Amino acid sequence: MTDAVPLPALPVTETPPLLDRIVQLENVRVRFGTGDASLLALDRTSLTVRPGDFVAMVGPSGCGKSTILKLVAGLLRPTEGNVFVAGREVGAERIGIGMAFQNPTLLPWLSIRQNIMLPLKIVKPYADTYRRDRETVFRDRAEALLARVGLAGFGDRKPWELSGGMLQRANLCRALIHAPKLLMLDEPFGALDQFTREELWSVLQDLYLETRPTVFLVTHDLREAAFLASRILVMSARPGRVVEDRAVDFARPRTLETTFADAFGALTNELRRLIFQARQDQAAIAPATATQETAA
Ligand SMILES: Nc1ncnc2c1ncn2[C@@H]1O[C@H](COP(=O)(O)OP(=O)(O)OP(=O)(O)O)[C@@H](O)[C@H]1O
Image (cartoon, rainbow, N blue to C red; front, side, top):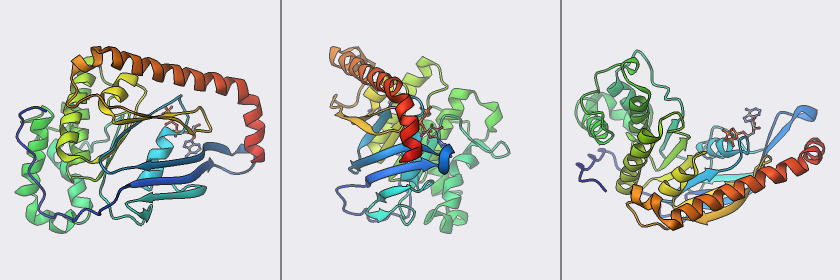
């Protein structure tokens, strides 16, 4: 980890539930639409995630990775099966969730600092004390996060004054400002150049090691998955299922040196082979699947 100043804690601290699993999917299916035009996106997926796991999801395009994120975030209901978050049926959960997607959707009329502090204004329990704390402890945390991602001094700027890489850094700050227990990242570095991306891997890893949220990361970058994750789920082509659940035990903090190791190369090659195989299987069964989908 870097020798950066630790993030100031937020004033309201919840007692974390003593759970051995923070997310559980039981035999989940997701079908979009109805009748002949319906599409089975996710098929009988079961999954258990422990608190503090860093889970990366990889697989062919359209295999249902983002669908799993939306299920866990409570943005989507399963067609069949159950999704539990922190021991409760999803949607009923009172757990903090942070999210960052490929396109940072910062509000253009707000400053970077105001954008970052927005979850504190909206999410309970922080919303209740927002007016009181916004100029003190909340602001301190925003400034500390900005410094950690290399944006010290940019809090007063507007989003349109920042580059794509800087916006993505701010996006990470916004996802983490309310100390979420669950961090959902959908290709957060997908639009960035390789150097910026690798730099942000280390930034994210440091923040993860310090605050230990449970992370779900969707990525097409197998090196990114291997660098960041403690566990990699490889999905089949649509309808998606988890076909491989691989623990990643490279010592932390990982550095670029880690990516040069033989074991790192072997892992990414194996992931590449599994995804290639999933795509081949899809091509072989595609006509049959189309018929089954409408019949199932
Ligand atoms: N709201 C929706 N209505 C209809 N179909 C949808 C909807 N959301 C997703 N799908 C379809 O479900 C399938 C899975 O989508 P999802 O976005 O989860 O895939 P993904 O693995 O994240 O894809 P990618 O890697 O390309 O981002 C895709 O075929 C997609 O077109």
